Length: 372
Image 1 (cartoon, rainbow, N blue to C red):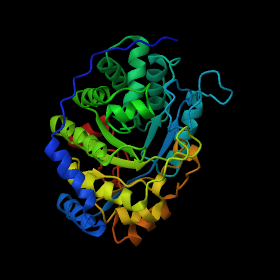
Image 2: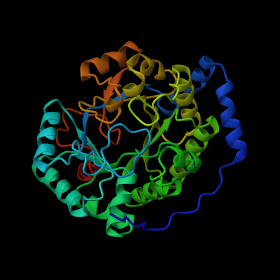
Image 3: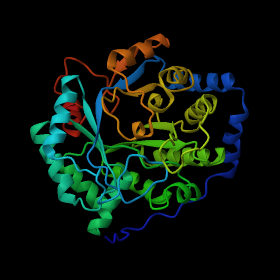
């Protein structure tokens, strides 16, 4: 199947070379000193110092993908015996299981499947909202891009149709490192830096919130990581639409990048601390206990992170590499409290879960009711 490019991407302005050099130099600071600076920045952003988390479920609606990312062990090419597309009913059953343990949203992502048309996505969203209502945090920038390319549509029009059908917010996946030299090496068929930024700009312009991620440890330089952070910071200054930044490390086992040196805990902690310092306009910085394990994640709470992520009763992408640190809610709360913090359950927009607001899931409708 031939997929045509649709829509022009904004040319990328170069990042400030002085800032790039200045922030990259932070990696040379002693680990504990850098952590103390980042923790103080987090305290200034939230003096109460609570650590948030969300109860949700990852639902990977398809693993069929034509992008062939070298770091992914999850995807299957079209025609593969293990390829799948979940039915609406299968997804509905997963939502009901999640809601039974208190889930307030689903995170719905899948492979770049060119055989799924826009009406699959709008029909699925309508089915969910009608039969299993819940906040849908779904469809990364690269998924939105392939829908637009299949239909030769502007991606903004795709986002508008999905929003009308019930999409509530957009995850930040597919960012990897927002430096095209790196992207061309590890994910040559994936959208470029400008396109990723353009799509999130369009998401924000249409009133939806999104998150931003960074996968590092794939052979990029420290300066590349800083450039990525600056790109996120600058778009946030323009739109204000990012709720959180989530840096996580490459898990290469079982992928084409198998054998890539593993990122050390020290390097991970320095990177999250620097993220807190550089991206000073995104309030929430999330740990990655799924890749680092809960003990390193506990330490990251003292290096500028203020969110422990998701209970995530299901996770298929990282776990396909053999890394599996999924934990039940009581255990997640215990790790937060043992690190010396108060654990607060939240919605996608970081509103705390309140038992007396049983109608509220953080979606656009609920936000309107809350304001009213």
